[in-house]
Length: 351
Image (tube, rainbow, N blue to C red):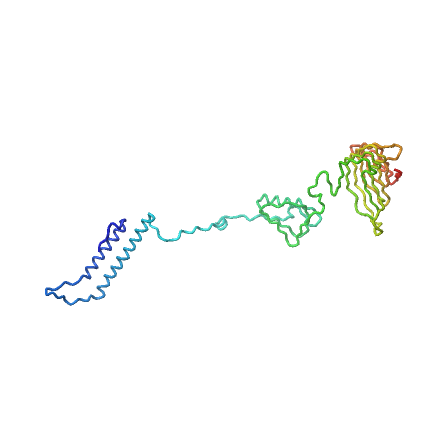
C-alpha cells in the first residue's frame, strides 16, 4: 500500500500515515499466495485457521480508522487554522444578586407615625407628622411608614421614592375639610370673601348685604376694600328685615348670623348716606370694622352714619362722623373711646 506524501501536510498526520502503511505491508505478507511446484501443479491449498486470519482484518480496520482520523484532523487544521471540536460554546453564568454572593444587604427602616407626634383621634391635624416621617424615609433612601389603627386627620402631603405607606387594620386617613389650612394666602382667611377695587356711580345703593328671619345661614368673614362711590344715594347697606320669601313655608326661627365684616379704603363724592347698618334685637350685627374712610356727602345736616343693633369699631380717621354704636381706635389700634350705646337705633328711611 502506498501513501501519497503530498496529501499529508502536518508531521503528526505523516507519522500516522507511515504507521498505517507498515501495518498494511505486514498483513499482505501473511496472506500471500502459495508458490507453484516444479511439476506445474499446485499443492493442496492450505486452509488457514481463523486465528491466523483474524489479525489481518483487525489490522485493516486499524488502518482505515487511522486514515479517517488523519483526514478529519487535516480538514480541521486547514479550515480554521487550528483544531476545532464540535462542541457548544460555554454558557455564561447567571448573575446572582449581592445577597446570594455573601454580601450583606440592610433591611429598609420601618417607622411608626406616632413616633413623629401624630394623634389618631380624628380631630388633631397630623400634616406635620406625615411630612416629618416622609422626610426621615427620604433621608434613609427608602423605608416603610406604618399608620396604626385610628383616625388620622391631615392635609395633602407628598410621598417619596422607595417608600411603602402601610395602613394597619383599623387605620383611616382623613382629609381636612377646611381648604384654608392648605395653600392659604395672605389675602384669604378661612372662608373669607373679598370684594375689592370696585367703582360704583349713579346708583341708588353701593355695596349691600340683605337678609331676613327665615333665611338662616352665616353672613360673615367678608372684606370690602378699595371701594369708590360717586353720586350714590346710600353707599354701604346691611339690612336684616328684607322680608321677601317665595312662599309661606319658611321657618321664621331660622335667623342668620351676621358678623366679621370689614370696610377698608372707602372713598367717594356726592353720597347722601354713606353707611346704613340696620340690625335688630333678633339679628344683631357684630364685629363690623371701618378703616381709612373718606366720603363726601351731599348734606351734612342729616344723619349720614345710621346704625341700629350693631357692634364694631372705627380705626383711625373716618369721615363723616361714625355712629355712637362703634368703638373708636387710633391708627396704632389703641382704644380711644368705647361705645355704650350699641343697641340704639338711628335709622332714617327718608333717604
